[in-house]
Length: 370
Image (cartoon, rainbow, N blue to C red; front, side):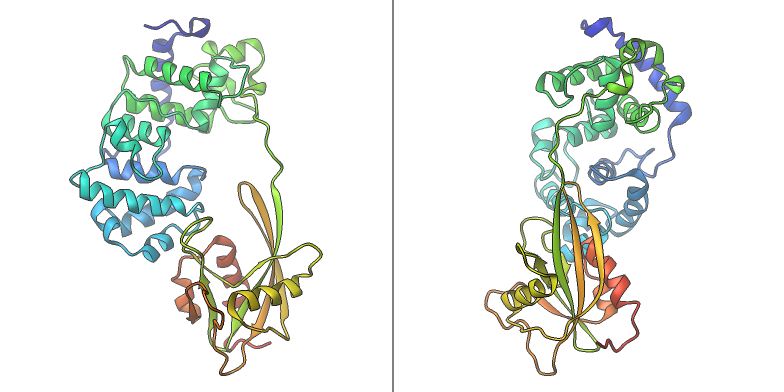
């Protein structure tokens, strides 16, 4: 065994962890399967998304795309629609790209080797380690935010968990814990401990199976670990969007194929410029994007939506398009079209636009009127 900080007994910790995990593991739909594809899907979904949100989305996804071949052959809109509500839509597109690469180059089976896994779009060290340890039983660390927090407290790490030396140490500790224990159980046990007991605030140390081994607990520093990174305050954005209607249908356009929320459908509009009112910003954006001169807009509401690094306040207007008006009239416009409510519901849309559709379109009887 390798010497660890403070003489940390990795074998003893693994035994206690596995006993606790056996008695306390949640019944999650991706547990109990050895299918590497199912594990890959669950781990990608769980990146920056809460378990309660992932559970129904995972069931929906697996019913639509039960295997790599089905996912690889699906349309992009089908994939994005199935991902709706999870955010970070690039993850869905990366999953489909990975499925196509696996079908073409790996015989339809998720690879198990480091180099091949890490070459898949959107697969980093954590996701690769999770697939390797959980699906293939390989001695590979999978260190996510929950596991980082557990290890920072167990070892009483006084610097940021993201420092390279600490990441290397975490990998070493997890490998030592896996030396004489099933890697799958160690990986899932550490994740579960961080999710249920070693939580960010008010850790439940009295319920922790590693309580007597935890250096931070013994030194009274558990609530100070992990040491937080300095973060920039989230940016606040103001934008105006239009529910363009001909009375029966609504007009939507597709976002660019690269960047934030790529390829999703949305209501037209954009950010307010300095000193600009929401109404004037809307008129400017509609003319720049669609060549449409808007008049007689009716403000129907304001919607606030938070993302990881920024928040947006959307000023929502209902705009009547005169009969015979052709949209878009500007060159180089994004793909767009007119849709009934039912057709719009089937399109993949950002969460804020789904809320607009529900709050100010579907709640109004047809025909839409100003």
